[in-house]
Image (cartoon, rainbow, N blue to C red; front, side, top):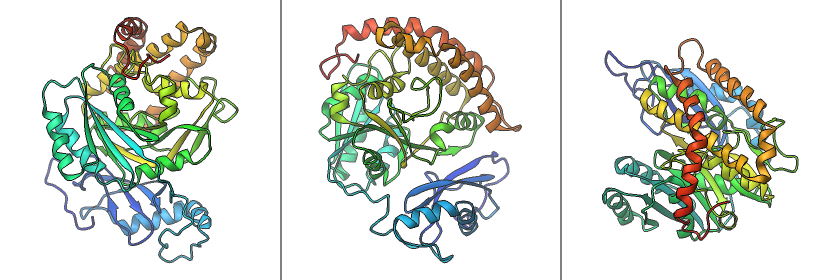
Amino acid sequence: MAGTSLPGPGAVEATWCGELELSGGPELRGVSPFGGEAHARVLVRLHGEPLGYVTVPAGTAGVDAAAVASDARTRFGAAVTAHLAQEHLVDDGGPLPAAGEGCPNRVDSDVLVSVVVCTRDRADQLAGCLDRLRQLTYPRLELVIVDNAPPDDATQRVVEAAQQQDPRFRYVREPRPGLSAARNKGLAEARGTVLAYTDDDVAVDPGWVQGVLRGFARRPDVGCVTGLVCTASISSPAEEYFDARTSLWSTRVEPQLFDLQGSGPDDPLYPYAPGLFGTGANIAFDRQLLLDLGGFDEALGAGTRTRGGEDLDIFVRVLRAGRALVYEPAAIVWHHHRADNDALLDQLYGYGTGLSAYLTKCLVQRDTRSEVVRRVLPGLRRRRAISEETAERLGSTAAAPPGAARRELLGLAAGPVLYLRARRSARRAPSVIGRAAP
């Protein structure tokens, strides 16, 4: 990256997002090449394991990888020492050694993993996603692309072109619109023991699947794994706001285990706290468990009236089934956020409708009703805290887009009615996996 020149006048004040591996010669890599951004935010890794972020100004010649590595060695010295100790290695102050046999990021598994990407009418964007999927290094994979309610054959042609280069790709069509319906189609078609979902606006890390399997290996009862969803670029105020809003799953580098037997945060909303566990852009399941649970609730999710809520719903159902959920930061993907205010406001409205739709589902069900009622007041306080924390992360130079809070509140108000309508529609169209989700 050193030596890259800045573009001409008029360049936006932006942040390049990338990563640096501390072992070997320091080299910066990103989903997109450096383009003259004013700052760089670098995910620092050792033998693939994320240690944390370093943010530095970018000079006229680009970003100095050696300087970032030196800063990271100092800042994350304790984490480096702890990681090397697991491999019976030491940090002698010189170049860090390559990963050894005892590396905690090394995964010995031969299970078949099914990767499912659900997409709808975004063929151009999908091509980049498939290119990154081809670079996955785990050997036993199938790659299932679910084309959701396609208006034409553009997506099919993109997948067929990818199949010419990699026969692991498989094209599947789901005529019923809705992300949950598409995910359930992927579940019905998948053959793997582990089923991993990601989105068409995501670039997966080559070692993503190994990170997912590391999460499953943390405890025998793990039924679901989520991972680190890094911001791929910050080039607009909308991207900056969304990045600040989603820090729970975009910056956490410490693994966390959740269950209903004592492993979880001391949070009055737990386990009904949105964003706590991760996001559907980076999520994996014990496939048999997901089948037993009835898959995703097709009254919830993007592409339905409710526009969201399906992720939190399935997380809680996994926990209520007596299984554990792991947030595993070694399972890394890079996400492209909404780049303009109109798209962001639409997404925030969907966050509101999805959350209140899901809570309405819980209130309708007898076994979750009292749990949710007890959390109403703490939930209102938590919502205010989220806004305050987001503003604090943005600092004095950036702010939420005009109307953001209002759009989200409108969504919260609309969600209950939208859920009841979507629920009726979902009952008229049975799930492809045999029964509707409870």
